[in-house]
Length: 55
Image (cartoon, rainbow, N blue to C red; front, side, top):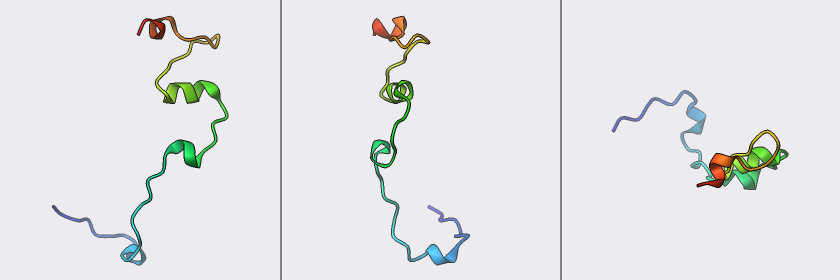
């Protein structure tokens, strides 16, 4: 495996990345988008899409 040359040498001794859930570092302001991220699709009227109800 080859490792690419670092563009910023000051990061060579830096710690690794932290993996956080999106919900821990953000605040949802649109329930429709939150539902899409949860795997549910909603129609324009705010109700669950008929196609999704069947699943």
